[in-house]
Length: 258
Image: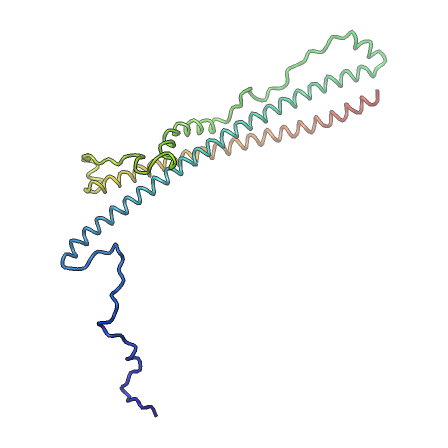
């Protein structure tokens, strides 16, 4: 039998006295308690709203900078594609020229192999060289969609210079207007001047982000079209090179039989 009465609670010893309990933990940003708590809470809420609005404005500004940076990288990639197109077109022209020269060489070899070929070939006038097939202009021209996307994005380069995080301070990018607001702004945005300015800044950044994403989409579509066209050039060039290789081997065999 236990020596404790039936009404004894063994967990009573673990319960702390109310006077010895530690006060509840509070965050430094929590509103203070006391007789002026309602007024302090309103002030706290105002400051919290302003703090969050400022953080949101700063976040949209950083997103805008990243968008401009991505756009600049996209334009550089487009220009590299245009340069690559020029190399492919020049290579194709060289292959066409080699094929034309090879045909002239085969004609001379065939004339030399005949009985009077050498004598006739001596007095025969040199064949007129026809210009190789033109597959494009001298200056590489990208597709119209890519060209328009490059020109449109280059017009935004000044904004990129003003928004890049390494070239400006966040608060110096677009000073938040703090002057008297128009009637339209008063109706749309809050009455607090600072909060209204932050909301205006956020909306402006979001509008610019929307237009910037549209430009990035145009760049991507232009690059896709350009890559597809260059794939066609590569396929055509591969066919020509294979045909030229066969003709070179045939000509080399004829030369050995002379």
